[in-house]
Image 1 (tube, rainbow, N blue to C red):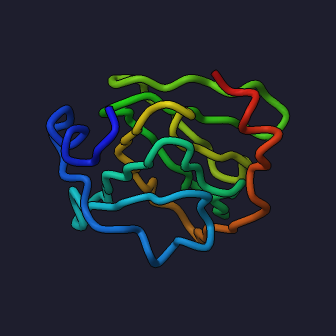
Image 2: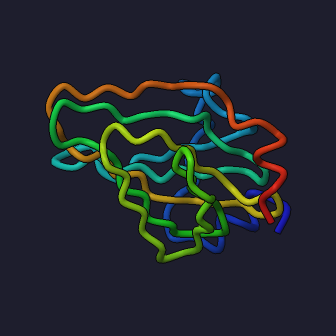
Length: 140
């Protein structure tokens, strides 16, 4: 599946607009579309093939963190010091606050997930170093 138009037909949420506000924290192009901005913030985040975000931490004094719900394509999630986890539609990843991680598409696939922000006290997203090509190229 090469084009964004072809991929859009396979998922129920809009791909949205280029994620320019966070472009400096991604390798490759990502897109974002708000699903809910009230009560619980939920965004559909779409990654072109080979796109991934930098290592980052969702900091919180209490509560906080993030939940990822895969809704299309194939991607990966990895916590610092652990092996990458493949994500396919229907997979859910619960990311506790203060855990260093990254997520993005597989090298040969578009990927979309719903990103759910978990409410917490004194929350902050801290962006860190990019996932190196050496690390990423080990993925299947």
